[in-house]
Length: 133
Image (cartoon, rainbow, N blue to C red; front, side, top):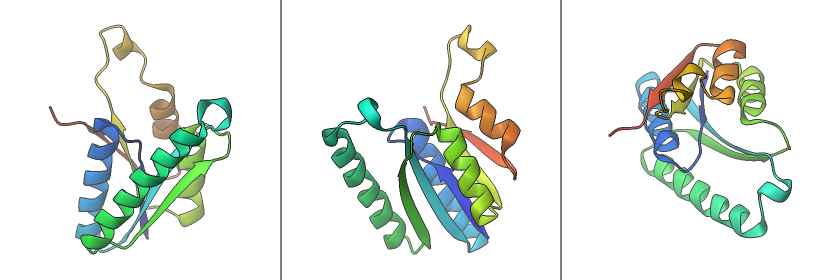
């Protein structure tokens, strides 16, 4: 049993992490935190180091809270949806938690492509949470 969380250092990512941690604690199960980057020109050395520091902080917070966890930074050239779906399949996840951001009226017509793909293609239920505020 495991819960997979898609994490990015944003209000939406932090909301997903908080909810995933709450669910992992309630269910006494493992939390797998995925930070997916396409890599290449989109992720320079400075960005990679910043992501490593942020993920180390996430790991420390989860450890301190007593939540069994695994934090993975994936830089495989895949879309985040592909990485989250693959990990959910690999670990037979109970569900995936993703964060959604507010969109403009026009943006509301089209859910973010990664969120939409995860919702439609995930091998398990998906819990979508909004950032507070």
